[in-house]
Length: 279
Image (tube, rainbow, N blue to C red):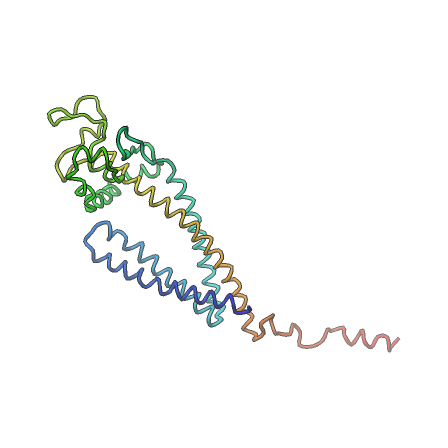
């Protein structure tokens, strides 16, 4: 039982050490891809891969070889990681509130509006530099090409993804006459075009569709983060036990520090022994 925590920490960090290799490899592969969305993942994946590699290496060496300073670095890194994940999770739940779209009468799909999302998400998606990257991802995803051949009956009977609902068609409430939008309609009705490279990519509904997809993915990630944080706290507790074991191993004595606190007896030992005799 004494080495149980060291063994568990050693095996766990060996697994995460091996898992960091495909993460780094995937980031390198993304760097060679021409797709905008994939290349955007390069730096985050590289950062995550190298952090996992270094932290796992420190934990593995410290637990298996009783290197106290390596385990100390491992515990510090784990503490910072847990704190960061807690902050990201709380922030994720805060900014992903709201949204979800509104039901369209007689249709299965939903439509999405920018005003339904948090101010932070709206601010990010409406900035040019963010929207240029997001718009490139939408166009490159070929989501609209999948429904280009749909008939009006298909739109009544089939569902749409948030991207397809917001970017590939005009809002359902829009009415057109002779190919032109009628008066007194929302702005997205005038931004729509049948041209395959235009469609509704410049519409607010397209931005809202992107936000809805981000909201769904981020919410799932936040739920997963809660599970990961609980797991990391358990691993951190085992790491503390392994660190204590590593410090005890320095003295070759498993149940405490095998060092005498004093070389000699108490300074007053002989005084109290000889005092009754003198008296």
